[in-house]
Length: 109
Length: 114
Image 1 (tube, each protein chain N blue to C red):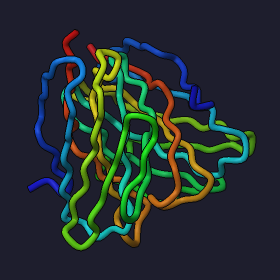
Image 2 (tube, rainbow over the protein chains, first blue to last red):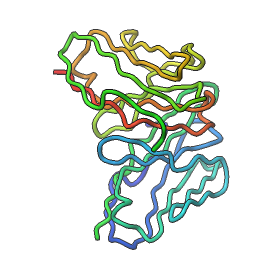
Image 3 (cartoon, one colour):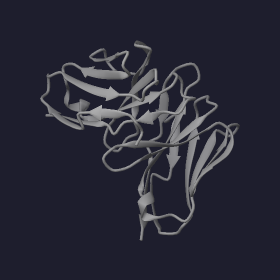
């Protein structure tokens, strides 16, 4: 069992739809990263959060530390949001980030 | 633009050869982490350097080694390349070690071993 699991693995939606990507983790953490990876490989950090909710533009991330679950939401989705979204959790006591396998999001115009 | 640059962007090597990948971190970032990402998989932690010392290592053999320099640049060296080493290699810099500080990723180096 992976320590960090994401769902769904692939998601295709129409432009304008509300998107939700989920992340569950079994490692003991108090923070979680959401990352965006475009074709070609470059990774951009979207959020690092340890409680509650954060919002950047059309992106919203929530986390429930007790339930070990986080969600990334995209409102009014746009084709340029098409990318792989990855959650990553740091382990307590070491310096390692454990990554989920990613959710491939495709937004159709 | 993350301020982290990697070189080269693409590289083809032959099995058994050695390779050096380079990363230039953001100024002031004392920590650099290296990751290997196989096709269709999430990145896997290779190791981390903090103030020029190794500060944590994942499940990679000793033929994966690294260096970090005072000018915020670093290297990942892989000896005796194997076909399975073909992957995207990512570096990420941060102010401090640990997963609780924001990490800034480079664009990656895509290594193909033939």
